[in-house]
Image 1 (cartoon, rainbow, N blue to C red):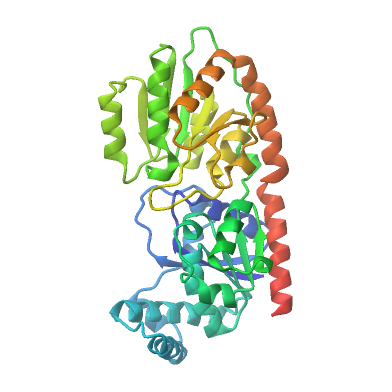
Image 2: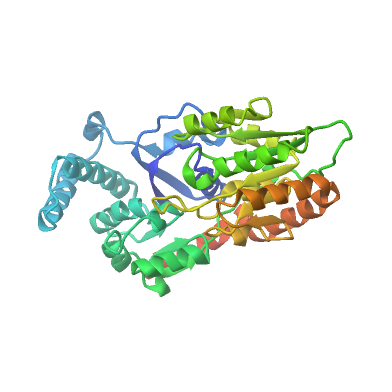
Amino acid sequence: MKIAYCINIFPKISESFILNEIVELLEKGHDIQIFSIRKPFEKIVHEEINTYNLLKRTHYFSISNIFKVNIIKLCVFLLKNIIKDICHVRLSKKSLILDLKLAYFATIMSRIDIDLIHAHFGTIGNYGLRLKQLINKPLITSFYGIDAAIADTNTYTELFRNCKIITVLSNDMKNDLVNLGCPEDKIKIHHLGINLKKFSYSERYKDSIEKIHFLSVGRFVEKKGIMYTIKAFYYLQLEYNNIELSIIGDGEMKHEIETLINNLEIQDKVILLGSHTLGEVINEMHRSHVFLLPSITAKNGDKEGTPTVLMEAQATGIPVISTYHAGIPEVVINNKTGYLVEERDSCSLYKIMKYLVEQPELWNELGKNGRNHIKENYNISNQVDKLECIYKDMINKN
């Protein structure tokens, strides 16, 4: 199959879940063409970008590239977009630029004769719908969290009406979309997956002289709950000298996080490692004893989907602590693969951290359960097999 992946920014270090899917589809023999609405700005990329030469499969819009496609077809597509904007009273300089960009993408898709458009994130689904209407190809849209959480009932009205398949990551996200007006029969729960070959399993033991190492990985944004991780760790380090916390990530809350660490005077025990590649993250997971991701619903309503990093951590055999948030209870099984606490509850988080410090014999039991859970339910190969079935069904019915 020839599949057009529509993405806001590609590549993006924090969206390894989309990259995992692309790589697995390529491995299964499909032709994936990537259409990136915006150009990337990050310097760090995952190694698969180069291994699979994905930038050669990625299309970006630029004025200079217009003359490399069929100008007549591009103009026809552009005119259709402009007419649609006029009908919806939304014509502006910004909309004209988007109209041109989508017309350019549609011209390429038409030339290579793609079979299906797969839009990633609901907001991009709205763009995917415009492409679907231009080239008359089936559209599937995948929601991932924030796109479902902070929308209103008008955001996706046309998308819900015209897109045949909407995928979500969890029952929680399904409920969010139903509340936004999406017909329930259009929604399919499709889990993310990871390549288990990359994540070797290792048992965790406490050496008598070794520090107990806590690890957290996530963008420095409110919903990752990093401030609560630091506060819980602060209380714990008042009782134990042999512990440390490493945090991998970067983002808009970096200054706020650094200020909290400095105010609590724990700079010598909390290490901010910055952004890392997946390989570097895996290495840190293997040298750590407990993984933390106490996600919360942000003040603006932003929520997680099912964080890939929780799958990755459990695949390595590290026990995890997270929260009763969004789809996380489906990824982390409380009291079996790890522990869950309520959102914004640093006290409960501290108590579970303390419990695992005092009960290191539980680490391997939780770790083995976690590895098996991810192997059975979040294996990328199995998940892409299911995605292929969705694709084929949509193409056959188009």
